[in-house]
Length: 412
Ligand SMILES: Nc1ncnc2c1ncn2[C@@H]1O[C@H](COP(=O)(O)OP(=O)(O)OP(=O)(O)O)[C@@H](O)[C@H]1O
Image (tube, rainbow, N blue to C red; front, side):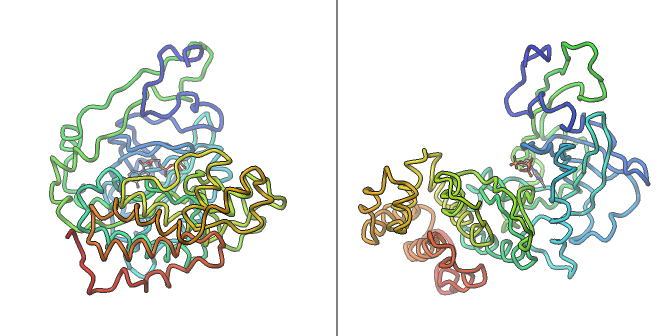
């Protein structure tokens, strides 16, 4: 935004535009994040990522105070998700994560909130969510192919944990799945900086001289290359079974919430009931619930295992047709929702879907044995039912024959 800032934004950084009222909390490397009642608590070491609603930072605890009742052990090196002020005021993420705390000492495949606090900036009041650091699964899946079945099982168990706590995730897709990183506490700050390499930064200089310098950081920074850091400093990470964590409850909801909030999930992972309400402007809004998560998880698993997308970003016409092809036909009412393509739905039946999945299975077999692939395809097809009531629960899915012990666990 050269009309507002002196320098162009760089790729892979949050939008400089979002440092303003209601926007991001200005953070720079080396900052201390302070809890209102107990003073400095975390030192910011590196950026981990950013999204539409937050920036996420690697930080280390600097006070001697133990994190209050940490659910899964005490981490000195943490990820801090700093929410936009507007999101902090209206979002449910903290409340959802609080309900998801594993109080029984178990280690669920769902990200755990270690603590949360608020900080103020000229942009507003921001929630800070302190969590275990992870690396996004898509970045490291290549190293964990032998554990494919175990990863699928953990994903279903993680979602079972979420649903069992009366929560709908609402935004399941591969980047919202992470792998827990043990061992960062054993590295010095210097190790993290030198092994992770220096970030690229771009100075933030507003062209408007009246702008409050406390409302934006002095520079934007790229994220730490966690994979490189792990390769150099913690190579054992790649040799162990991955601990899966489902992340980002930012678009989630309580199952009993009325009215049901708007769904924000990307079309590629959105269940047919969401697609119909979006594209066909079905009156009365859409009831997206745990069954919609089952659909999204199937798309996520397919993408993680095959490294291909099941539904690419498609037009209003193409996506319903693709769903009909994958599921072996569309329900009769779709003819009235999508009159321009009603004829084409007739081309799809269970036979054409079998043929399509046979092709997909051939692509997926590169990673698994033939029998594993056959069973995984059958599991995914159970999850990908257009009628929400036909989608099994996570508990039912975990009893699927794909998880039977006698089927090979790894590569052929
Ligand atoms: N616990 C964590 N450890 C390491 N990195 C994380 C962690 N949580 C989030 N990230 C990184 O920060 C990015 C943004 O996080 P997240 O998706 O939760 O934010 P968001 O603002 O809700 O984004 P979105 O626009 O996807 O809804 C993620 O893509 C991920 O790379």
